[in-house]
Image (cartoon, rainbow, N blue to C red; front, top):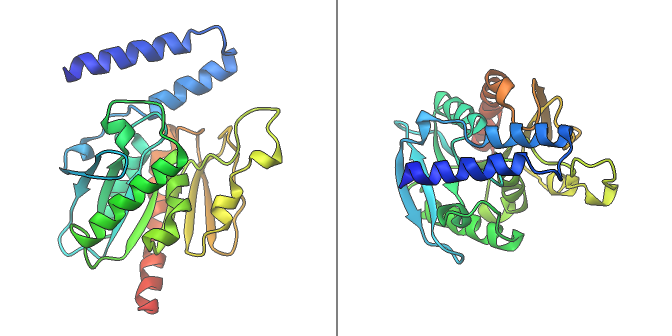
Length: 254
């Protein structure tokens, strides 16, 4: 059944890529995005738990370490799951810095859908998962939240509600990649509203744009586009360099 599901998904992606509604440039971007969302990752083989949310069960893959210093909770991109290359690289970096890592699958993905749920449902489900983890598996740990693309936006919008001590954004989708995109469509406000240390790791050729740094926000450009596939070592290095500062700040606040 799993093989059949993957085969059907790959077939639908192939049909989508051949659609006449995409220009060659758009088709190349879509192909790289889809590829980023299906990079196999051995790190997905972890303890998994399903958590009830207001919009159906979410699934969390827990990667524990001995005597964790803190926890890192990450969400996936719009059309993919938690097995993307950048999430795997970030999980490994988190482990190296002594953090327990939880990879969260939103209810729409658990239900087998590729199209994202509405914003309010995404945020409510994510918040419910964090509440569960804070009371259970990650109890007593400071939590850094984040994710890739759509998952990064959810983490930003809910950072205050979840009590996050930091936010880690991979390939933050700053603005729709269209020539006609207006300033009103920018999502920069989601980053600007954060008051905790924030890391944005962005491909240097990301068609969604690159957000500017600020007092609370560190922006690191790595080789590649929105998929971040060609810059995974640089992604891991940026995460490893940023995390210790966040943890040190948390200890000072305490």
